[in-house]
Length: 265
Image (cartoon, rainbow, N blue to C red; front, side):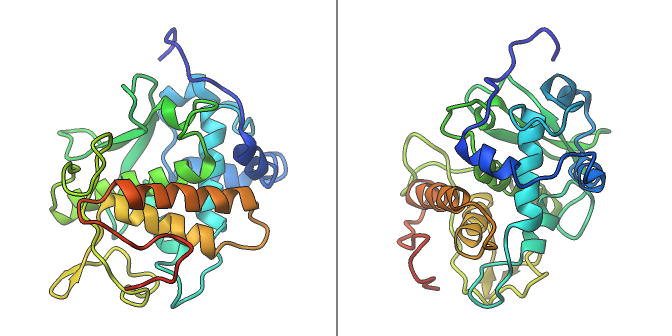
């Protein structure tokens, strides 16, 4: 990583608003230590990306910390109207082994070819991993947002879920998916179909299943509509924007539901 061009550093308005919520490491060292361990951010690829200054919200490491903070604390949990529990999204996104997946680690990479992130599963004699790329960190880019990065962490972890459960982990084109992007199937379910703490489960009859983009937009919807009062409005607006954009463009079967409407299933 050293010697290569780095991302475009800096904080947009949503990153700035979220970073102001997080005490510095000297005031809250437990959170920073927990985030590093729980999301396996120990790879040396993070060294030139701000790992030594985790409070700097303008650098990729600090931006990742801000997204982890949203995952860990932002959703308030209302049982039936919510798609899934905050703890479900957090457990899925964490790199530690649990009912969702085996262990993996998260790397910082800057040679993305335009991708936000990518997960490698089923590696031989090596731990599985997720790579986070510059588009989710580049100041002014369409993906540079702590809410989006949090949803990307959930999405990429779901590829590890797919591998853990024996399912193919690629994406689709065609159908109602916009030609400029990739996508998945959306598997409709009611807000009470997955009990809190049970998102890792699935059923084929009746069909209770999630694709990576689906669990990503369900997280975005719950953050947009069921966040705590202290979550910045800019963050909930971002969650609605990113979720609705994906609902419109990234599902093979057309989904008419949008975040902000009554949940229809």
